[in-house]
Amino acid sequence: MKAVIAIAATLMLAGCASNGLSSRPGSCAKPGSDQELTLNLADNMASEGRLYASLANLEGLPDSVVQVRLRKARVLRLMGRNSEAEPLYQSLLGTCLAAEGEHGLGQLAAARNDNATATTHLERAVWMAPTDDRMRNDLGVVYLNQRRIPEARIEFMTAMELKQANTLAALNMVTLLIYQDNWKAAAELVTRADLSPKQVVEAQTRAEKLKTSAKKVVASEGNRKTEVADASSSANK
Image (cartoon, rainbow, N blue to C red; front, side, top):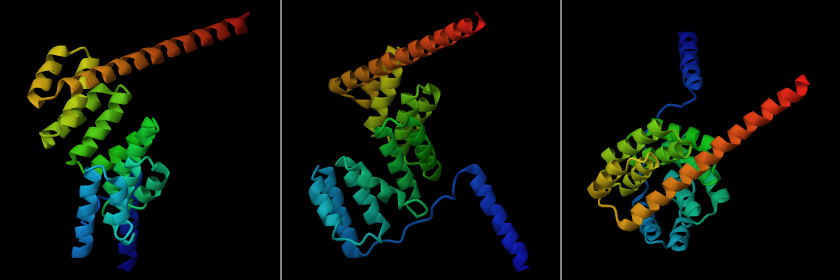
């Protein structure tokens, strides 16, 4: 009987590995009341832009608490200390905050313009936490950077519907619509989401940058094809 159970367990693990995804994380143990108070204080300081004060409060808490490691990773990333944030995000994988760990690693990869790695981490994050509007939005941004327009649209729409107050997802969706020259739909969304003129300019600037970089990619691919053709012609001579 024990042998049968062992074989069954091995098969279940093999199945998870074949999908490239671990099981969805369970719930986290709640921090102590004093720890939770300090975590909330650190969160408030970070939201106010007082990152150094936030980190100072977190340094007084034990790293054995996963919520502490997550807060530290976020603050360090916002401070631009990505090399220190990365191992903290890595340490969350396999814990109850695995989705947050994947999300953070995806954000760090996106900051390095490593869209392939960012996509891998963010897709895992969304698989683990499919109703997190922040993760859906960030995955949409990475898809948009890769001109994967249908996928980006799905993520932005999902993020907006999950949290209607998510103006960031709406702003990114406006960027996508302008990129497609769908000005009518973009204008309607700007009104519906109550975006400011400054945000509209930001979306338009980003869309133009995407168009410019897309043209460069097409041009470089065309040049490469020409070079290949020239090389083939030389070889035949």
